[in-house]
Length: 401
Image (cartoon, rainbow, N blue to C red; front, side, top):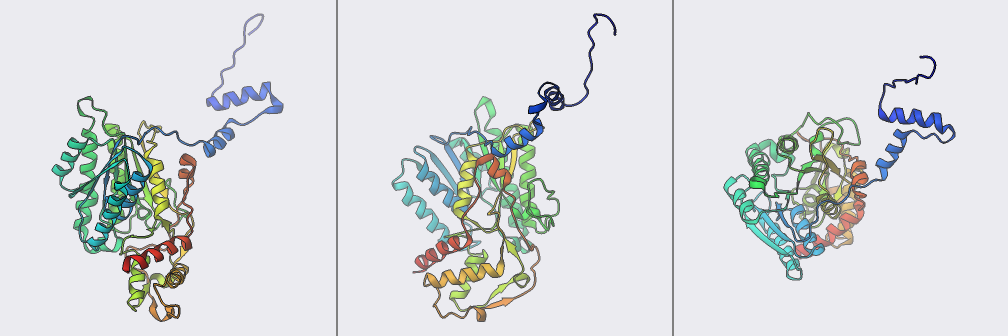
């Protein structure tokens, strides 16, 4: 164009690139790449709290379980005037007396708390039971921790996993869906337990939530993956804000007796031999119960914003981000059991261990990438394995006294 005509140039590219180009032309000496700024901001910007737990009704499934009981107790300690509806089937997968013990600890905490804990015995697979709870108590936040646990047990007892982990979770999702009926405010946030087991035999470590998890090696893992898929579908279709938490090898006082640290202790105390699988060459990202509970409380207060597909859905890893060799783990365990007077000082540990091959459904390594958790919540688990096992050993001595 000539004369006084204005010359226009059409720029084809992203808005970020266009602005960067403009900055380059006008401020060459101070040019900063906007993409780099964006990456740096992502590392330090935490999610805002958008769910106030005060004066709310919180439904916790699996409330007599290891994580559920500890979460209930902590919420009673931290918040005034909340109402916790705790449900549990109280099945006999392991000693029911331990579940009663946990419930007693919650009730003791409630005596000095300004909040309320209501326990209801029932099965997640009982749709009428779940619907009645939602109708009667109208929970604001739902934390689904009830599930049939155990990788190896799922190989021989698949029915209970389908009932609890699939049908039970479906009933929770349906109840959340209908909580919005007739213009009701409904559930503000659904938080549910997934598992590190969904990563199966992934070769890439540490495990990231960006990794594909399409090859489970146990039925338990498959049911947990199905939970994530169901939650995504319900979030997409019915706008239920949901967050899944992939827990990594949770341990601590009053934990599950079928977990290695607890089962090993029982056997050592009874002078039995413990079997160390894969000849001790397994590594686990052991995560202490207090860290797990702190992470859940942080997540509960921040429901996910809509992603690029308009879905309010997110999944996080919660692990210690430090896998420990199984032989090192049992060495620390027996040292702390001796220090707590659970085992005699002269106990011959080497005479009570047997190195054996890998079990079906097991994996060699679990290792959590928790960078997203740290970025969004400013939190990552930090309890060392020795500190955690020391607390377990001291608890075990008192519990068995």
